[in-house]
Length: 244
Image 1 (cartoon, one colour):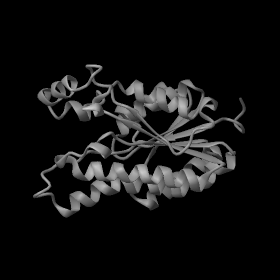
Image 2 (cartoon, helix red, strand yellow):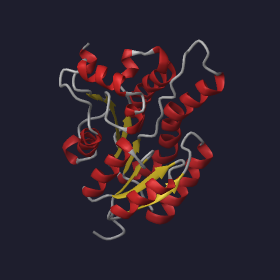
Image 3 (cartoon, one colour):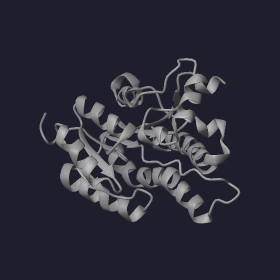
């Protein structure tokens, strides 16, 4: 493959957890991977050194100016983008009764506005390939609702709406889909505490947390030619947790 036809994927929030697993899967599939992070330079750099091709770009994707600057770097380096994975996010838990307005706004910006920012900026690059792919990482909590992460749940519900809206808007040149993970074995999940983790496992029919690789494998499928006739869909991967 020459530099002119090398396929390029951008993964936001790629320095750890689900994002890191996605970057690794896409690299294994032959993509040059743009590893985005906000403030995890060491982790992002370590990942880049393990991957065959790619680069690290620091940007707060909640900031449209930063996203445009990131796009300029991608264009200058590769001249194209084939895949956009909107993975960056944070639960930002808190008691809704006392939640500060700035915390609410930041939660919406990180989990929802960032997705809009990236699609708005990168859609023209994706469309030029004729087979662009956007995969948004949502959450099953968008439909379940939990007071302590009300902002996160609301934002992820918004991402579902963005997914269906842009699936219509960007077709036929770009397919847009969403993966809704359940509780995945990441630092973020483990930080809540062992009691919470065990309670989740007990309520999950498959009796385990998901692995980041479970989600990464779905991303790899959705960006492949095997998923060429899929757009506007939400795919749940939660071990049956949402069944109740």
